[in-house]
Length: 170
Image (cartoon, rainbow, N blue to C red; front, top):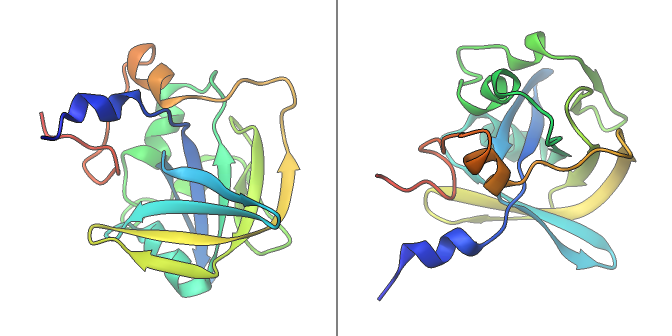
């Protein structure tokens, strides 16, 4: 028996995951981001195979993870969470810079930026898991609280897009 309500008790944050391909930037909102080792520090992410950001990470072998601030507003989340980079230039709508790894870094509404080189990818059917060592990290806001998935759903009344790892058809 599988009671999907049990999965609701897993805690998540919300992050912008960004990538680059042929000089073009893209990013999306992800909740499946986690540290998998301490020494060396490595991260893993899982992205929907149909996303443009997944395509960019497969091509470049690198990505950035940027935890969102709790104070972020829904219109900002909508830029990265509810529009496709195939038809909309997300980075034209936000303040950003390019880091030493050549990756786009959002400089508003995020707590930090963590860069990763992909060492392994695993096709999970609908999603791909990317795993790799952290190549750089920078704190952008010391005193800010991270946006949790619970806060996003209960306080901000945010919805879960169909491509998300936690999507449930109602």
